[in-house]
Length: 308
Image (cartoon, rainbow, N blue to C red; front, side, top):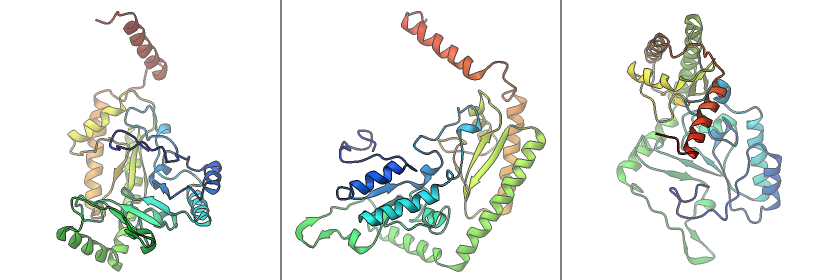
């Protein structure tokens, strides 16, 4: 679906269908004899059919965490449509696998995929990719055509250290202690979110935390032009973020209550510095209109060759 960059082939034989669309189900139904599989990334439920907003967004209305209403029911309808058409349903669980639930998004949505893709979580952090499925779908050879063998290769494919790490992880995943640790984590997260939001409101900071299982985000409760600066104040306070900024974050299963307490201290410290610097002052003009004028003026000057 992303040709050229990172993908040498042009996806002329791929259908890009919208999530939560009855028309998508009709297309799958009508063209079931042509479709080899349906691939879904369950994390797309946050911002249906669009890219997630980054830190320069103006308000929390543009950003959310958690499935859109009815998404679970939609996945079940998709599951039924694929089953009726004899089409394998593939879940891309590179991000969601084992993070939300011991069964990943399948457990969170209570739906079973035919094939599941996992990333390095399954290998204990080692750089690997894993595709799981039943024997009839995962067979490398075609019983009807002896010379037809699927070519599979990877840098760490079958590496003894990787296999040992995966074996240890899967055995750990099946223990009762592991299931309990997910419950403890979710309890700690709920308590942290509630406490943090109360502190932010009490001190007048225009941010609010929200989460979906162990995935969380920082929302801005008031429009602001400089929200993108908050990630740098967080870094100064000792909270390093990934390249997506404050939009999508993760809690670790290993975290204890003291870890959440320490994070809250650093969030509050970053908020204080952000507010002290005046970056959260109420805007004195309509931000969207102001930006529109600035961008329009710059484009106009560029067209007339007036830029210095």
